[in-house]
Image (cartoon, rainbow over all chains, first blue to last red; front, side, top):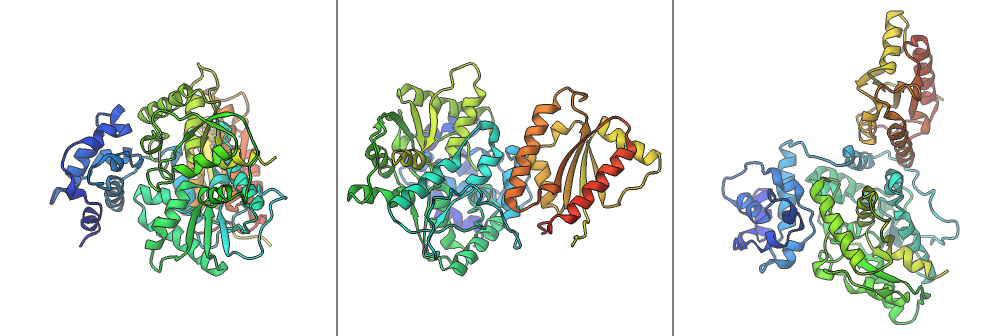
Length: 376
Length: 135
């Protein structure tokens, strides 16, 4: 069975009733009439049709279609399979940021890589001696370097997460030569590139004896938890999102946050929300920090994506989605837009920056970074 | 101990940058054969993606050679170029490269000898920095 045949089976794409609900709820299809998930599913699964589909690169993998589909057809995964097929055929993929991130990821899979990525680590963070529990930082140091002009501070979230873990007395360590989890290569269709990165990380986990991974990045979380076990040999490591670790401690009183008294709204990152079904934990952390939560319309399962994904495409359609989400945040009346994903932060901040005519808009802060501020 | 340097990429702008390279060849000045010149309209065209790609493909060092401040043919390079240069420098350092491996040089029109001096100095800087992260 070929890869694509297996994916057609595993994604349940043949259960598609052609009802078009996926297309109705798709944020991309709302602004781009060329993009039609229903037709992509129909064309892509038609027997003997292996014509390249140029529209597949616009999918945001936001899982809105899966949420709405009566049969939970895994459309994003099917799109990833179509992309992998196109990529293997040598299709030139359109990349945002001049392809910098893909180049970075491929360079990170080199065997003799010796990164210098720990300079940001605050001196007061207590690291454990061993690596039984690992905090997986993600690409935040690279994001902050690459998006200096946007003044994003994705490391603020990482530092906040470490501070929360220290306060909760959960021992953890950090890998000095951690590589990208490879999710964006997987979404781009570069399975070989993804496997190279995953293997390099896996070897390092095994060498250090990692048994549990905690991460603050939803993309790393999902990839380490769902995709890494599929690489040859698997990983067998427990993977937790920071919110899953912190929330129980808040409930049983082992960790107490201070009171911030601000009105905030929360952006559900697609990979954390619809993909990983973590909706309540972030909200409980916000509540515990004394923050008043004003929900955007729509939120939770129906939350709108931040508009861009995987450094693939960033054009007028993506910008319209971002502006729509920012308008929803403004309408909620919140002072701060809290998100749990560094990429949401980057994309929404970029949309804010590009809009010169208006006021600076809501402040965008990472959930862990904000929660850690309440500890001061 | 210095390491052998096999690939040096120099992005030159079509104007003052290229005129320096052309002047060097017209005067018969020699520079190492490891230098590969890539001509672009303006250095503003060179973004982090292109610089990183050069390193991905095996460059040991990348030099950006353009017009002096205020002399840009398109009057646009100052902001964009500096911004891309600094952010790429930060990213390369995170990846474990040395800061000597990326250089921004601005030269006046037709300075062939200056170009040869600059590129030779750049190569020795790359040689003396730690082992480049090879493939």
